[in-house]
Length: 358
Image 1 (cartoon, rainbow, N blue to C red):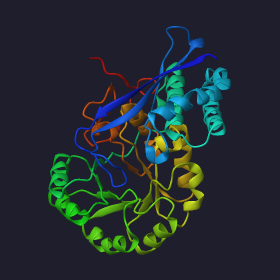
Image 2 (tube, rainbow, N blue to C red):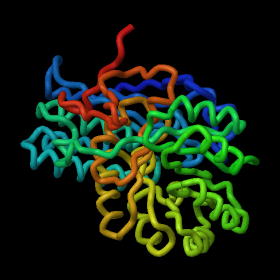
Image 3 (cartoon, rainbow, N blue to C red):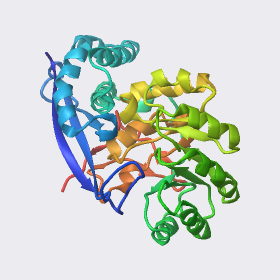
Image 4 (cartoon, one colour):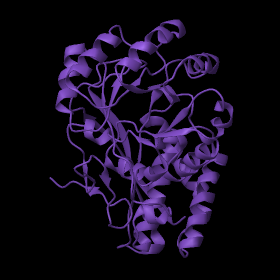
């Protein structure tokens, strides 16, 4: 076996408390597993691929499950090592085959697969001296990211919205006891589009009653109002809503897409759910073929996964790639926002990010 990995679990405090409707706790910090991938065939001074997996208990993952699953995934991709060292066309094909091999080895475990898939892409791109978006054959021109605000008292959320006023859109977590009051408070201090995310917490009739108010407040979309398996409720609300319903917890992998046709207007694709940057590219492309509006989201990850996500950002209409901005301090550097809140895709090989020193 020529491929070897080293991983560590990072707990990074949030800049502000960040809570969502379906999670417990105070939202004090984010847990992420950082992966370093080496290929002995490159020699001792060879490139190192960076990856990251964000374990979310909602999807059955913890840092412990990632640690257990990674050796199995590494064994699954090892046969593609020679092809990954080939020319650009051969390497691209091998990355797809390696991703499919991980799915054959074990179901689910999207965050663990994401960590290894991103590291493989980073390693291949670094080896070839090209940026990740070039390896993927995509454009560096991407939409701006919004900025997310967690559940809190309306006045607190509004104060945070005022501080984030430079962002062209805000994503507000709802599903608490004061949704309308919160949105009205935000609208008093912020003039741009508002996107709301209920994280499965709404009830159908109550959600339908909110629609006229949401339209009047300039809400742009409604994300995951009902439990993931209640597609009947999602279809019912979409039929009554002029606002697009975008599903997140209901759209985990590419295999979910066909069953969502006619249910909702859009899907939220996240690397940690679908298994990495390669699967995200394929899922976004398939979603476009099926006529969905495409939202590219994230967990509260470092700029390792945010950089990987931004590399496929040209395939999405809306971006919610602010995970590293929610952290008190990002352990990695190299990814920057421009004046319009678009991520500047690094011209450096691979992800273009490195571990912050000191």
